[in-house]
Image (tube, rainbow, N blue to C red; front, side):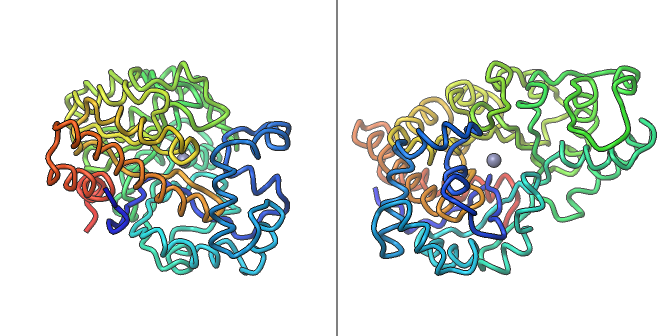
Length: 367
Ligand SMILES: [Zn+2]
């Protein structure tokens, strides 16, 4: 199946940096989740993704397929956004939903992104970053609680299309209801990384009903995707208490990345009407297995539950190649299901349109 004509909505992505990478290590860093300098120096250049990426970028920019030549050719563009204007139209990217909580100072804002690239951009607010800002400004726990409720309650009115939590790689996805006394005991004023489980769990359980009231989706980081993550705590099955809560059914839950828990996420998406998921990051980082992951994702979960995302950041190559490899892999997975007779040709086409954009439009209420 050729899906290149279907525009994608990338529902979990990060912005471009304001300036080009200082050197090859900084360039490579956007195409791995490892923060280990030795990994960057000795091993990243030998990954399937990085090798393929260099060849593709070289072909697009008309230079030799070497890292040095690619870095040199990129410098003909004034900024990463200028390069995006060349690459992104080739990938038919319609809409981007940005998590703005990552490397905030070095990244363009959604408004700047839209102005620089001409692609419709929406903001997803990272709850832990918001909480850290409010903790830094609050003198007491009660002040924090009041400010938190006001901020979370006003997200929709402020233009956000979703909230996001990275609890998976802070204190784990077993997010439990906590008494205010325990959370208050864990509160310390000042600017710091929010890594206290009672405090984060309390704030998230305060946020959930406020999100449900606004019909605002929440994205949860799941599985692979940050060197910080203790993968045992990033299994989406830990979310059962949140997913089972009847009063939270109006808060759509999006499970991001999911690798290696693609099957677990598929079970949850197949069980709960308000749960959906994606296979971002491992696609594009693991392109050789992409069709297999997508086939696995769709083994159990209905096609109305899988969304496209790249989780790309920093350099526009990731957003561009993410869309390309995903379309190719989804086409292969759906064609295989059609060949075996499980889906008709028309159903496979409908499923492709749903996964690449229709599901995101429905869940986030995008026009
Ligand atoms: Zn991400």
